[in-house]
Length: 600
Image (tube, rainbow, N blue to C red):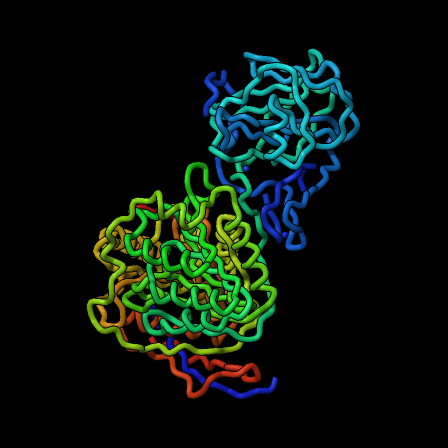
């Protein structure tokens, strides 16, 4: 593949349907709930898919915490089951419920619900709108915002699957079946069909499972003026400086946290009156590093509000983002709060910082929803009950790493906040599908059958130049080499403009930990999401898609240098101010294992 080189010229210039349902909102700019019942389901007529998609009726950034979000299905002509919660995080599943939607006032006299084994009579009342039906209404009241009514009988919703039939007398009105209920997840109906009271038994409903109190956020897009782009290990000072400048609030989210220097900055902020809060993953892969314990002790002693998230039925498989909100400044990186990452000791990571009140507010909304959730516990409680593990990867660098890429502040047009599992995969796939010229991907590793890789390969099929750079650390080498070879073979077989390789040994960094993409040298995506299904479908991840040629060119230049094993190429003779526009003159062209490659 021909390589692209850019001549950098700096020029000064003046210048988020469906049915009526209620979703418990645990978040400001929108949102959507874990011991076992024994009997098994009979032969189901339909299987509900188990995934973590958003509920079907969720509003946009104007909602407020605990607000009811509704959308009306104008075609509905009869009652139906629209929500199930068979497996709550309660002793014996007390409080489990189903939600019945009644588009118009309906008398429930002679109405029943049955699973084929047990039949429960619905209360003899006239109802309108969605209502929750439960055998334990007092317990259910704390699990839903719907009005709760008690049905008469011992019907239980089986965790291992059920066939539920709603009847008016002897007439079947609705039916829903599922194979298994994930812990602490609600099922929401998503099909748009409706059932008339005198119709034949309906086709089984479609729907999605969604974790209790997990957010369901649209992409947040803001106009911005400028941003500071930086990479690691070159510029570890940027994260520390950002924390040190906070005056009012400082919210820090991470996967692992072992940096004593960052802990000291947080305590210092708390000492000067800043509202400081931290949220970490409670059970990272391999265990919580031993170096986390003194960090937690420091933060606790310094009055920092620390919580960890995880455990049975937790909203997210892993809390994996790496970001901070300092007043109205947003910092998003690919790196953990540890010496090898933010400390600049070894990892090649990408980061970005910008000041924008609306973006900071939206990211703070995500933080508060996660920090205040039912599946969190205090840092002190976590410290008292956790067995910490030795982790050599948190140490200092084994060699001196130079600064080749200085941070740069440059103009940007718009910035999009992408949140996983809510919207990140879908939006990133859209951005990749819009590529016209070039896609540069830098990843520690890439999982099997991930949609964004499929979108990247589809781009190559339509003539977009694609380069994929992967980590070569010993624990990634075998699978990454296999993937690179398969991609290269695909490119050769189908004559695609696609190259994939592992990064060569370099004295610039020790391993690739970035999760970055540059599209057409116009858009750069920076954040925490690895390219695998778990990251996009199950984890909490945060990414920023930054639109702006100068910023995108910065990351592209770092990519080019790492691809070729060259020293840093990006330099600017002065700090770009808000009144300076960086214009790029593009030179002429110079020159798993495991992935299922679909056709475009």
